[in-house]
Image 1 (cartoon, rainbow, N blue to C red):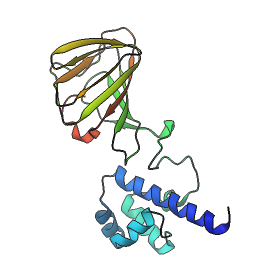
Image 2: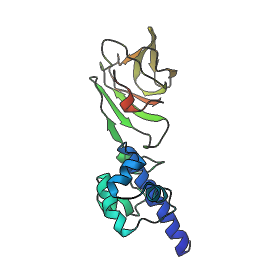
Image 3: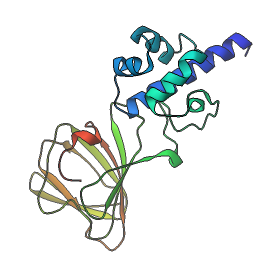
Image 4: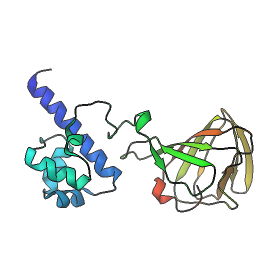
Length: 198
């Protein structure tokens, strides 16, 4: 790879990182550009790797995103902020309102689908009543067992079993077993769009 190709690849990598950081914080292109004192067009070109991040833009853009400037330009391929990849050690926890449940976000910030690793401890669950929200859901039980109620029908699922349903149907789940249950759960709704339940 010659110097010009290396520089172009670096611009793309930096742009993707900036966009990932912006999306993680739920900021629009216009909001971020205004905070950094850049035009929307300039920021858009930087994010798409069509324009290099200039030194005079580095500091205000880093401040707008609430990160140290080196975060935007480090060449480390294992960076946690990426549009397409989430490293195991960089997973973010998702706030949960129910006891005995933890969730880690598996999907990167710009993904259309929300991938989650859901762990339900023995006796843990979504509580007394079912909940619903917009979207669709799919899951696969990786370890343990789970009782999943969808539209008043109770399903007992164990490792290897999977499910899919419209999120608008009332649903709830609990772990009736003696070991923790781990589920790969995919949802079309973003975590902050699920107002109730887990």
